[in-house]
Picture (tube, rainbow, N blue to C red):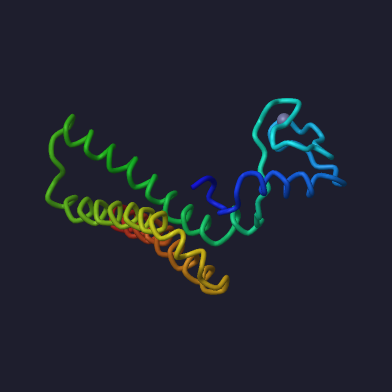
Length: 161
Ligand SMILES: [Zn+2]
């Protein structure tokens, strides 16, 4: 067993020591320079250290765009849904004319929340796709969710006034 890299801890520590032997690298926790460190513990703050492969594309990539594109509309819809539920409790049920708007709104709330959950659940599979395909999916999900808010609001305002 041991760590997820499959490298025995002793070997992992040797790799870390070899990497730090001639490099000025800050401890990721306290920024103390851990150059020439021979253990895997920061001498300044005591944090455990490990060597790993990273990518700047992981954080601000298409996956984040897809998640935010679905999560922001989902948050908006959820807040308004709670307001309409609260209003129907305090001022009585909505009128017959308001019902279709309400049902459409609840459907969109469900759609965007489901999109969020799918984006989160399929993260690994998504990240294995080619970058071009990731961006295409991210833009499609974001446009669909954000677009639904814009279209809904435009239709609502046009009908109301
Ligand atoms: Zn430290």
